[in-house]
Length: 220
Image 1 (tube, one colour):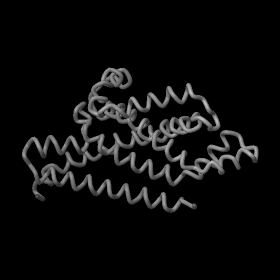
Image 2 (cartoon, helix red, strand yellow):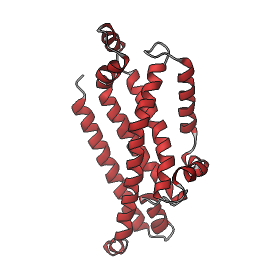
Image 3 (cartoon, one colour):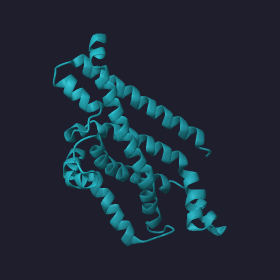
Image 4 (tube, helix red, strand yellow):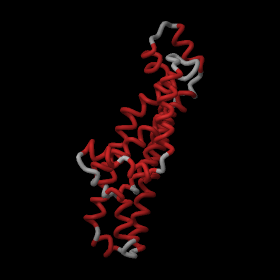
């Protein structure tokens, strides 16, 4: 076992680095774009601050369509768009495009659900004090929902790691691709099991950190 790990040590670290790049970019996309999209869905719902059925229907439909795609098919479907954006459809950088798109859709839905859990009384109290929509969102709704937002992001990150294992289809690399190429295809079960253990430890660590942060910032 140790001999096998030593033999593939360089490839393993490279695969881990590629996974971190893909997941890191998708996390940024989820926070920078997914959070506002989820907030827009919440605000434009019937009875909310910016009620707009047309905007809500369009954004809601787009999110649902993206989330409905089997991820492998989404990767293939987005190849022309990826080539347009990056200049190539192969490699780790290219893999971040479909991952970022699914990340935005995935996290925006979780954001919407977290914000829907905020008591109506909090919003009504903020409005009665003369708070603007921006103040209501940033000083009241986000504060009240922060624990749920962190837990949602934690769940999303774990999903992104799972999605990243498929990116070998477009030459994206990553730890999942390494397990298939060097473990499964070369019948090295011990090497594949080692990679699985790495993934399990990584997921458990992320879940522990996310849950701990959510518990600390939850003041309810």
